[in-house]
Structure formats: structure tokens, C-alpha cells
Length: 501
Image 1 (cartoon, rainbow, N blue to C red):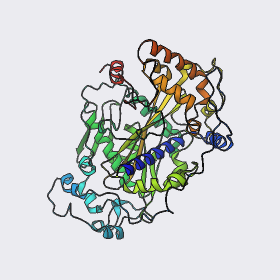
Image 2: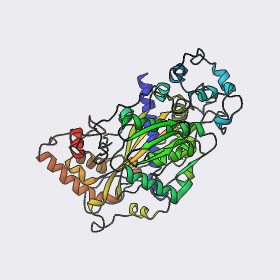
Image 3: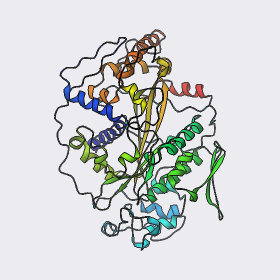
């Protein structure tokens, strides 16, 4: 069991790393591939005013990690039918009764069908073994905590939006063989609100106005999954930040979401669920739906305003393996493991992790051909690229299954931190310095940090010495993943002191 856990952990960690890899632009992917194929020797240079481009060694031929593609048509995710009667608030005897998988398999909702208008709802089922009649009986904003097994968050009573900062995520690891970057979701922190909330909502709405279906779109059959994730997200905000968010329900308007930060309200039934999220939740969501014809998962709906080099429009409708087809060795190394993981992920075990990179300024959405891509293609003179322009970008990511539709949701939020902040964060300069100088070539190639290393490395080497001289870090510390990861020693007092609560 333990070895299986590590295999799944490594697999899903690799998947999320791949999703992060897709963030880089197509031109940068070509650079990575070229380096992967052309490397003959590798030696990291010491830091200097100009850091030469990386060359990368070809990986050894990867062993095929599994038999030929498996048949997932009759493999269903773990069910939680026993939670139905509690969520519905009644004692209906059949609500938690067992349903034969063979019956569900025969009567699954078609892939592109809208659950609201299907014929024979009492005998049509979702992949979770729940009939569409049972879905309807639950109504809107049902008890998703009970249905999923993931509790609602505790109220954050001391929270103040005016000064709130995101937690200082620093998902820096050394060495990369560890699997601890994959963790069970901290349920209080699924959706994190901070002082840039209103600015981010405004920016994301402007991106949609400008780019339309490049950042938000949905295909038939995604209706229930979109409704679920929207309702779960709003329930979370109301439970976590009750001083700012609430829901009301009336006969004339139905459910209304009241936003005390933006000082407005959203009538839920008046817009598509993804647009409700666009108006109120500054995070990205991709909805992966199980196809009953083959049991595999497909990207059927999403709002993605934080992707760099790709878009909803370029990936919508694709199967998991098709999304990752440009990734070297995905088919040989990970395709089987990831398809199997998606088929078995329970609703009660959402996971979280972070990926990181170094960026010039704070680009949120960069479609192919965006002028900002030029910054990744050269090392600018330090007169044009001061340290103050360089930021750590962390994409804090969550993967979870929805309890009614069985859809899998990948969501993430892009967080930017000035690299200059690392001066005051124990061990972080040491870790980043070691990773930049000695990181695995293929990993560092796709992270594509070369374009800023000539500015960053001299600074963090200076901060290393400062922290050792001040006693913040022992001089004989052997660099390794911190016990506090994805944070650092003293992070909570540092973070709370900066935001004031």
C-alpha cells in the first residue's frame, strides 16, 4: 500500500508539473526540446553578470510504465451514496441504497447531454452512481461537504481584506526525488482571498472582454460539473469569509450571492456558472468530464485567465493524453498512471501543490505571440532589468473530484512575489541558489529561469552570506527541502506581521 501511495503521489505530481509546463510559450517549448535533444555535456557555471544559456542532457530511454491502454469504461470512481439522505435532510430509505455498477454502466448520462433535460431521470445515472432524479431532489447549493466528505472551512474571523496577503508559498525543493510536494488539501485554504481581490477580478473580466472563448468556454455535457464547482466555491467563500460574502434565497430572484468586497450581488440563475466564478472568484478552473464511451477524462469547460502560451480554446475538448501530447515521454512514463489515477480519485481526498518560475514583471495571461514573450528569449542588460522587476510566480494548484457529476476539477491561482523579499526569508536564498546552479537540467530547462539568472544569482548569493552572518541560517546548513515546505522557518509570524492580523 505504501509503495502504491508513492507511485500515485509521483504520478499526480508529475501531471501537475506538466500542466505547469504547458504554461510556457510554444517558442520556449521548442527551446526546451532543442536543448533536450542536443545536449552533449553539462556543467553549471558559477554566477556572473551574464549567465550562459542552459544545455540539457537527453533522458535515458524511458521504460514503458504500463501495459497497453486499459479499458476504463466499466471502472467508476468511489461512490458516496450513503451521504445522499443526510445531504437531502430526509430519511428516504432508498437514498443510500446500493445500486449495481452494471445497471449504472448501462444507464449512464450521455457524454454531451444536459442533465436538466434528460429523459427518464430516475433511471439515468452519473458516474457517481447517483440518478438525475436524486440530483434534482438535492436542489441548489446542497450540502456538498457531506456529499464529498470534505468539510467546509472554519470562519476566518480576524480577516481584513484591506491588508490581507497570500500565504508566502515557496515550493522550492532539493532534491527533486522527493514526493512531498504533493499534499492533501488544507480545507481552510482552498480559495484564498487577499487585498488584490478586487483588482484581480477587474483584470480577469477585462481579459474575458478582450479574449472571449480563449479564456472561458464550455461544451455540452459540462452543465452539472460547472454548477457544482460554482456552488462549492461560493459556499466556501461564505463559510470562510462570512463578514464579506453571503447567500440569500427568495421566490422572485432565487439564490443571490452578496459580495461585500465589490459591493454588488450576483443573481445566480441569470448567468452561466463559469461567469458567476468570473465575477466573484479570482482563480482558474478546468472541468474534466468522464466520457462513458471509453471511461477517459476530457477537458469540457473552463475559465483560465492565468495561462501563459496556451488557452482554453487551444485545449478544449481534448482527452487528458491529448492535452499533454507535446510533453516528452508523457506517453511512455505517465499516461497509464494518470489515466488510472483519474479513474480512482475519491471525492474526499483533494490534493494541493505548487509550481514555480521566475518572471519579469507580473504577466497573468500571455497568449501565443504576446509581446511579453520576448523577455524569455534573452538576458536583458541590468540597466533594463533591475532586480525589482523580477518576481517569483507560484501557481498554487488543487485537484479534486466533484461528488455528483464525478467531474475532476483542476484549479489554480497565480501568485507573484518580488524576489527582493527573499532577503528576509530564512533559507530561501540558499535553496533558490542551489536549484538555479545545480538543478536537474531537464527540470530547469522547462522552468526557463535563464533569462533572469544573471540578475538574480548575484543578489541571492549576497543574501545567503547576510543570513549566515545574522544567524538566520547555520553556516554549515546542508541545503535540502525544508520541514516547513512549502513555507520557511518563522513564515507565519513573518506573514501575520506584514498583514497585521
